Length: 72
Image (cartoon, rainbow, N blue to C red):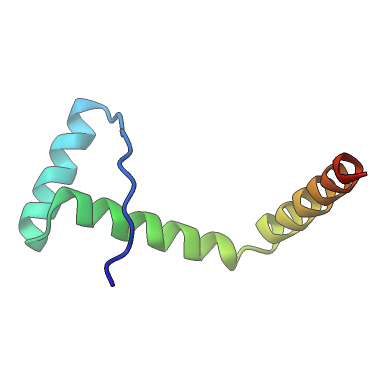
């Protein structure tokens, strides 16, 4: 089964967009594939960042407290 896809708009400076297009061309992938790969690598790097994980845990706790209050 294919993954569900969501369309998003990305605004880049013209020079960065041109560089991205050339990198994708050289790598023989679409720009979308190059962007998805970069995003996947960024997300994975965040998962391994201790400070990010601390902020994530704090946000989860804060949101859970709000959701618990709303559920009463």
